[in-house]
Length: 154
Image (cartoon, rainbow, N blue to C red; front, side):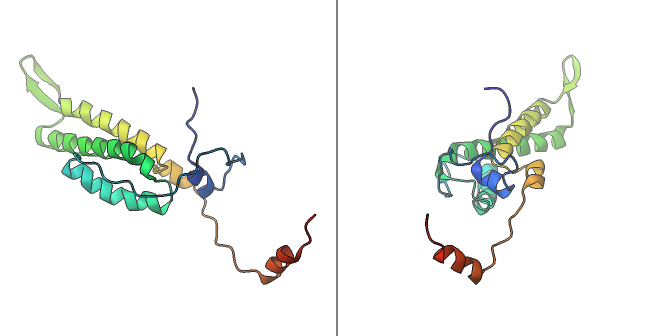
């Protein structure tokens, strides 16, 4: 199916549902912290621990998102390790035929693309945040409460 991927309802609600389309057809899953999978590297585990509370705060994370989050954290670790390799050896490395691009550059670029796709899925890119509109909390209005409570049903 070509076109933009649909955003999670939680992200649409945070943005104030600018399209004004009904939100009722989406599967509603309670916000929950998935269990961290075994086998994640040290850097990936650190990123998992950093990002889970942020995703829970905006209510876009559930136990169903475990694999997607693990894939993001793995891509993050791969990006960090590739960048460390680039810092160590540089953008170009020597080969029998002369200087060539460090393979870590390709690994870093690919990992960044994967990270971006997962961040977009979770609504965590700078562009996504600029479109989020926080709704002010409703103030207690006793007159409105009385009106709606006592209004006869038709």
